[in-house]
Structures are given as structure tokens and as C-alpha cells.
Image 1 (spheres, protein in one colour):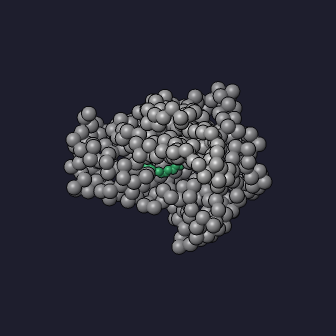
Image 2 (cartoon, rainbow, N blue to C red):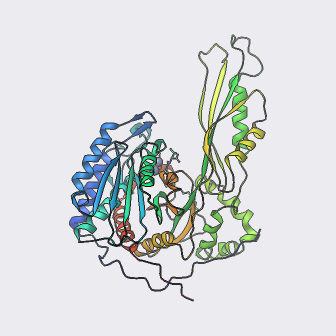
Image 3 (cartoon, rainbow, N blue to C red):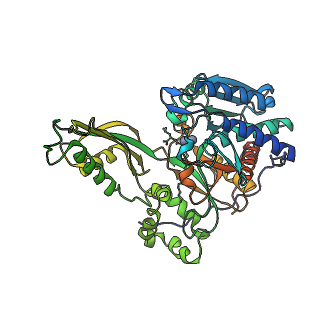
Length: 481
Ligand SMILES: CCCCCCCC/C=C\CCCCCCCC(=O)N[C@@H](CC(C)C)C(=O)O
Ligand SMILES: [Zn+2]
Ligand SMILES: [Zn+2]
């Protein structure tokens, strides 16, 4: 396979729509931080599909109304509650002929237990060394609050958008988004809305995560991996543990699970959008790596074996296998009649659910192990990231306005987002929020010590501030020849 080396050509002169300078006064910085801390302190936890903290979701609704008075009173903004706790804002643009875009984020968070090793209680929003600690600080209250805070400040300063845009804040993203995102999509569909682009949570600004890449890179998720979950189960006759058979149901199942973990799905580096990531970044690598990057056709197997050495970059290059639940046994002296395990696979862009199921069957390859499909969906379509793609270029410019030191490149979101429900409204869906992601940060997503620096939260507000104004251009500038 050959790789082409492609660097985005710089676009020509931009129409100047950012007439409100991206600046935050000391008072504004103080206020936005207070607002953010209160948002983190409200435990909007999704425990399971049938168990959410409803009181917290109601409290969060009141918080939004209290801290964003301009958003809730402006004649330009229509606010609707959808599915009881999700929010849809329609911000009317002056030119109804321009196609609208949409920003997404989610209010709910996964559970957090202080005893797991948090340095601060997970719903305290405590400040330690310039970071705010708390569940939701990077997934995804920084976007919820950042988007509305940016709009609040723009409205305060007399902003009237030219292009209509929507803001969708889901309340159940962590449990599939059926009541929030899906209902918002249905409402917009019933109104005949089509979107120029959609921006949701997802990838971040990577800094120091990839060996040899000495500069930070903003990875815009142009797609997201698919997923499937299978249940493996084994049934054997129960009996007395003093006279056990050679293999128990637990042993048979454990071997099958071990085979799946040992025989990983194939490394598919180069067969999906991750190839474009490295082509765009090639010229940013240090001297010794640059030769590899510029000759990916020759060195792709070397690079792919480096990438598969660490969990986050490994997720970039293959369908991953995660054994997430294992249940069996009733008493220490009773042979278990039944053992079951659930395995969650995140599917690389170049594979399908069916192909992954076939590989699972052939790896398990034991008739005593029943393999059941629980659920799944194929990888999402790949959104455009060309020089003339409106959404991608607007996001890129907004990153460059606020983070001039950062290179922007397409990437693949390794987890799923509410935006996957929006494919009928727009072909161009992007997954990105400008949180900094440094070595060790992967463990903070859904893990312990989730945190964001105060400076980064301010940058996020300014990013959305610019994004809203940049989206007001009628057309992208023409390419420089
Ligand atoms: C070259 C560098 C590669 C580094 C790639 C890895 C970078 C990972 C960075 C950030 C990942 C954040 C993912 C944020 C979205 C998480 C959303 C989520 O948890 N969604 C659920 C949805 C489910 C349907 C309930 C999920 O389990 O995916
Ligand atoms: Zn999230
Ligand atoms: Zn999450």
C-alpha cells in the first residue's frame, strides 16, 4: 500500500466576521469559573439506562437559567426542553438563507467513587495546582458550560449571528442518548432541518502522547468507531466440588476469554482515517521520525507496532477487545452450572460488526461456549476534511485562532458520542473539544482524578466564542494557488 503525503494548503483571506475580540476580563474569568464549578458540583450521574439522578438534572436546568440570563432572555434564542431534561437552543441568524450548524454536548456523567483514589471528592470541583477536579470536567461539562458561556458573553456584547445555529445538550449520552439526542434529532427532522455541520465532544488536543511528535496536535474526529457487545456463556452440570470434572464452566469460559484477549483483532493501521492523521502530522515529527513518517509506505508496519504499544494509540489502529463483565458461581463447594462474560469491541473504521462477529467465532472456536450477539453498530461514516469543507475548516480556524501553536489534523474518535444519532441531519459530523490531553490523561476519562486546568477552561470558552463568529462567514475563502 502506498501513502501520499498531503499537507493542507493555506486558505486565502477570510471574511472578517470576528468583530468581537476574544477577550475575557478578570471579572468574566472569575464568573465563568464560579459557574463551571457549580456545574461540576451537581451530580448528574447516569447509573444505568433505568437509573439517573433526576433531582440533579432538575437542579442543572435551574443552574443554566440562573447563570446564563442573556441566553434565556434574548429574543434571538428559542429554548426548548426535550425528553424532560435535555435542552435545545435555536439561535436565530440574520440571514435565513444560510444553512445552520449545530453544537452538541452532554450534561450527564458516569458515576464516580472517591474511594477509588481521587485526590479530591469527585463532585467538589476542588482547585488543586490550577486544576479543577471533578467528574464531568473533561466529559463533558466543559463543553456544556463553555458553549453557553461563550454565547452569554457574545450576547452581552451585542452579537447577532448571521447564520442560525442550534445547541443540543443531551441528558443521557452515557446511557445511549435515546431520550435526549434521539428526541432532539426527531424534533429537528419533523421541522425539516438540515445541518451544514455538527460539532460534538470527542478527540482533544494531544500533547506528548505520540513518540517523536514534539508539537501539540488537535485531532478532529471525522468519524467514530463502531461497537459490538457479545455475551459468552458456558453451561455444565452442577455437582460437589470434592469430585470436580477436569474443566469447570468457569475454566472453559476463562480460556475462551483469554483466547480473545491474546489474539487481538488485526492491526489495521493505514486502512482508515488514522492514516490521514499521520500524513497530516508527518512534517511535525522530530528528525529521526520524520523519515519514517514521510515514507509511511515503507515503514507503516514499524509505526503501527509502536502505536499498538499503548492503550490510547492502540485504540486508533485496531478493533479493541474489552472483557467488561464476568459472572459465575453460587457457593465455594458447588460446581457452577453456568458462567457468563460480556465482551465489548470497539470497531475500527475498516471493519463491520459482521466481520468482527466472524472473527470472534473463529477465535473462541469451542462448541461448549455459546456466543450471543447483544448489540452493535458499524463504524460511523467518514466526514469530509478537505480544504473546501466548511465545518472542518471553520473548526480548524477556530483552533488556530485560540491555539496558534497547535497543528490541526483529522482523527478517529475511539469512543461513541451523541452525534452518531445525527447522521440523517448532516453528512459532516465532527467530534472534538479543545481540552489538553497529556500522557496519563487517558485514565481520567471515566476514571479517577478527572480534571481540567482553569486556563484550559477559559480557552474552551474562547474557542466556542470564535467558532460562533467564524461560522458566520458566507463562504470559505478561495484557495491560494
Ligand atoms: C495519535 C493519537 C491517538 C490517541 C487516540 C486516543 C485519544 C483519546 C482521547 C479522548 C477520548 C475521549 C472520548 C470522549 C467521548 C467519550 C464518550 C463516551 O464515553 N461514550 C460512550 C457512549 C455509549 C453509547 C454509552 C461510550 O462508551 O463510548
Ligand atoms: Zn462524553
Ligand atoms: Zn463519557
